[in-house]
Image (tube, rainbow, N blue to C red; front, side, top):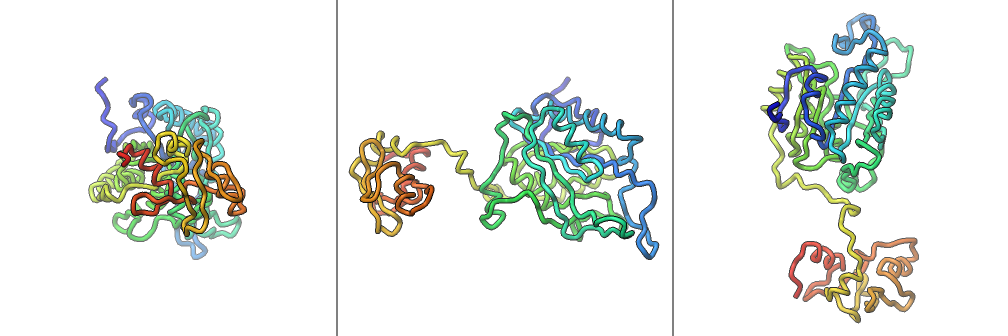
Length: 360
């Protein structure tokens, strides 16, 4: 079989058939928005008897739960095969299907990392008044296995959320306005996902140049956002109308300039460099004074990499924590030193060491 070109392509075809053609361990991340199997039997109407534009497409209909479960197990099994060992998958669904999908995910050996609740700011009301307004959808995020070293851009998500940890309940509007694809005044796709949702997912759990798969591409939101964020994409869509709409959408999409795609690095992903290593290598010498950022507190570096202050002695972290009366403190950013004519955090010495710069 000829080598399959998977980068920045979308194809019109049956998802299961096309997934089987893909080589093992091809993708870094998968986002899947499979049929929900809503089981709508009657037309939905408003109190004024006008028709509600609901999901009643044939592609969302299955004869029974067993057939839906078999379908789910089949496509998820293929996704696991073609996911890289450190890859991850996102699956979105409603109460109609997400619990069945979650069972299949666990039975196939994926490792669930989070379930995320997408709270819709502007959900469709429950017109009959017989149930709670269905105002959310659930996403499952899972790595290929328990041992997978999956991507999670923690610092970028924290920055996106005003320096607070990103929680697992996301307040985002449904797709509306100019973003909603329409033809002759009607929605092109009944369940088009908002770009904001995919922006958050791809920013959080993938990196620039990663290869992203969407096996149920729909109107092309995943591929569109991937293109904007400098990720490579591959999408499969069975319905010709949706495929053509996604094609047109992608042609109009412009990537964000490469200079603006860098994301904050996680502190945990940095190589560990003991402070003592800088002393051993002569980057900072025993006897050197280090200070807090206001130069009110002074400590002296010892030959073993410990530091000595009037109140305490020990590691750069332990002594800083003692001075502050805190349980812990990052000594790399607390302590400063004089480097030439500059007064800098000692973390600058570590960064120069990691960047393999010359020391003078």
